[in-house]
Image 1 (cartoon, rainbow, N blue to C red):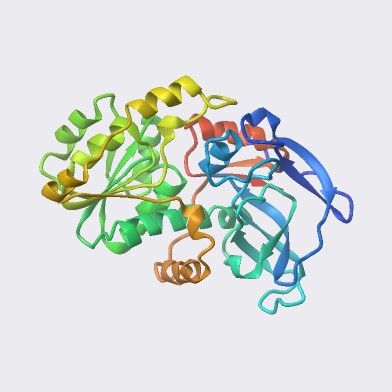
Image 2: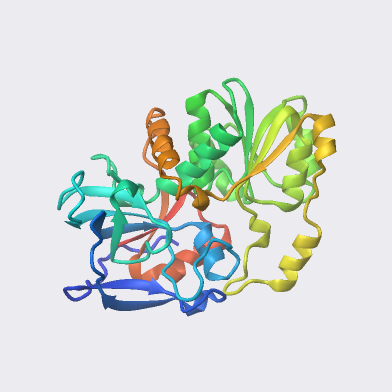
Length: 351
């Protein structure tokens, strides 16, 4: 599914190319357009985008299933990497020609993006633009879930669902850096060998009766942390498998994944009606906890955002794994691969 890498035709001077949808609800409404560049804010950096990182949140936003998405027309995308082409009058930390990577609250599916200077970082010399565009969302989600909410400690064991995906792989690497044992799960047997090549020796291909599978495979191994974006019966079984003081950290629910183009309303209603129910009194007696988050709401907390950058830097993580690269004009094909669940690692658009 990886596309051949050929440069996308540039927009005329003073203009940019963007992928925009007139409204959420149907992936097919996403179209490639050319528009005039806006004025550059004083505190922003203009980036000639070379790579855009795709996230499942993009799909949910485009199909109307993401509460944090803009209303009306919008450009999707949360992270990018590229070269500085201009700096605002108040910016001193970057200069034209710098290689950078960063995050935005939507708007990354564009050939040129103006990014607040404090939302950019220098791209490591040894990293490609694609690797830079694969860093922020996955790494921040994994770190916040494991460290800040999960409070995982060295010697403990974490159950990482969708461990071959972008967040999952970064979670695996963070756990290894912290001395936390990992049990990874995948939905497809084709991903097992890849995950083992990444240092995960315990890999489960999720079975229909996941509760029975966990009981059989884990035996007496305690699980102290679950990082989950699957939901449904998988999430419920994972919570019940937690050891005392264990924490289930939820950052998504792919059981609500849309169809090829649109949300599946009947499917969503069915999954909603049979979603897991949790009782606080039971949590007290069983000494287990449930926490959940949406990373985009943390984006506005600048001091916390900066603190997480410093924390993650101490881990000295390798470059993220980019499993699939598509040309910028192939965004619909890239999104379909991500939606299908067949991708491994990060899916990236390049220019």
